[in-house]
Length: 370
Image (cartoon, rainbow, N blue to C red; front, side):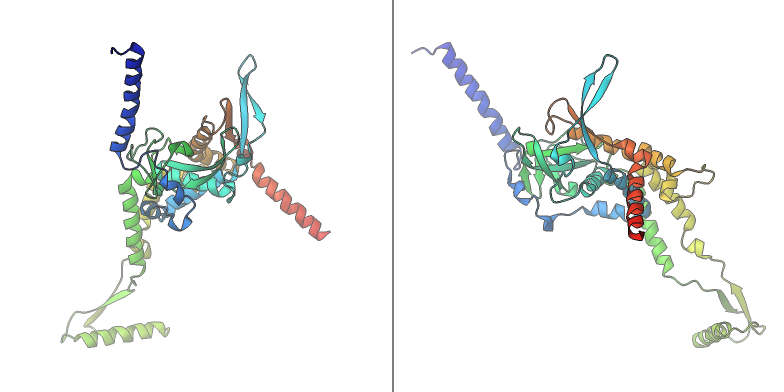
């Protein structure tokens, strides 16, 4: 019996639908359909930040830069808005925030999760939040952070991330990418760029530590004539010389066969001060912050007030990461279309967050006095 056209088309469609599933199964052992990694979310005993990150953070300038920018993102609150054309430009219309804007993770304050989300962006160039619950409309209601060092993406390799991954593995198990919010930094992660500069800084710190443990002799006694002295006699002479000096004797006497030479090595040379200053400057460049914010001497750099320092830290350091977080949380997999979130930057730059704390402290003090 001849097959009808409709039956022929139906068979083709069913055959085409079966092909992707076979290809996905053959592509890797961790596909988006394997959600075994979800069972490891929240198992904090297995969480790690990564050896490469831990080595980099041991460099003082990198640690200082990280803490400065983390403090910026950690102290700013999120606010939600929509946009409306008013005839001239797009006007921001404030909206009541969703509950997670005040507490992203019900178990943690936003200060912590925002700071460590930035940490992942800073060191690895990306960060991950796992959606732990959803509201009735299907949008996320709460999240938890996944350490970037524990996340592998089988469809992308470092050092540059090109798009959100659709093949995510966490702690050895696959995750459904629809339940993961992926933050992609516009700046390459520290552990993937300038590895030689970070390695140089680590070796320099190791050399300084070694030199710091090495005592510097104040001088050298040298026999220039007479019968050669044995090793024990030389040691005894040096010990008696040190004892006389420690006793406070102002004058030392040597015969014609012994001379004394002062050591020319100074502590600043032993501790490689100039090399450390240069390497600190290099690390400030690597972290994209003005060197003076990391305590590096910059010579004739003009005086900066606290407000100007906050502006420099925001403009050159934290802004790119803040925009990355806000833009990601404004996408349609997190919020409804036409709804956006942003950090309250004006409050930070004006210093109101600090002034508010000072006023509260002052009020409490006045109450206590009265």
